[in-house]
Length: 132
Image (cartoon, rainbow, N blue to C red; front, top):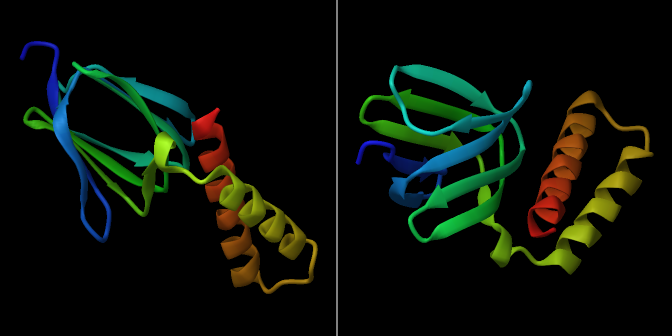
C-alpha cells in the first residue's frame, strides 16, 4: 500500500465513504489541494465545492460541503457538512434550488439569512459543477 491510503469521509449523519484511495483532490480557500498519501499530521479546512477521489476502480466526483480534512500516517479523514456523489445529483432540483436562492438574495435579508442564502447558492453551484 505504498502510494495508497485509507480514506474515510464522515458527515453528521453517517460514514459516507470508507475505502483505500490513491489520490484525493479537495476544494480549499486557496484552491484545489491534491493529496497522494499522507506523510505527516495536518488539518486542512475544506471549502464547499467539488471533490475528486481516485481509487483502484476509477475516479469519482462529488459535491462536498464545508468541513475539514485530518491527515495522519494512518490515513485521511474528511469531516464535512454534506456530500453527494455526482451520479446521485438531481440536476433539475439543483437548478431550481439555485434559482430560488438567487431570487432570495435580491431581497433585503438579515445578515444570518444572507449567509444562509449564499451557502445555498454555493451548495447548488457545487452540485451542478459536479455533474458536468
